[in-house]
Image 1 (cartoon, rainbow, N blue to C red):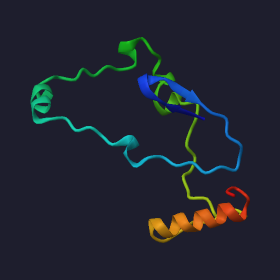
Image 2 (cartoon, one colour):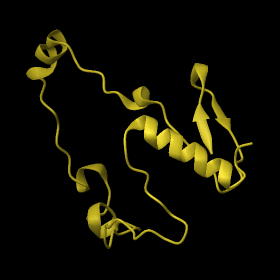
Image 3 (cartoon, rainbow, N blue to C red):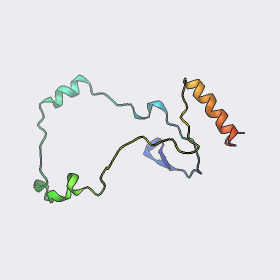
Image 4 (spheres, helix red, strand yellow):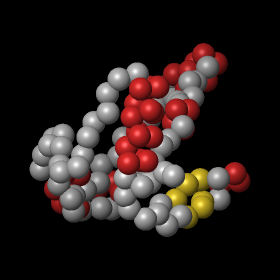
Length: 107
């Protein structure tokens, strides 16, 4: 598993399973363009190019050239030992700590 740290460097970690991971809430907040930026690019024409314009076979791009095809999307059933924690954030945290202590993950 890796994470980006200061200066664009990437820190790689090895984690034994099972594990609990969390991500800070602001990790992926979008940045909005100001009105000046919107006006600046409003009249810029975006060129459209086909696969043949780029010298690429049309059979090698898009869904025809995809090496992986999505067959289905679904939420899996809860497996053995899986549990969805519900409640307020504080209640979920308390329950998670109890579960981790019971399983020997916290002492």
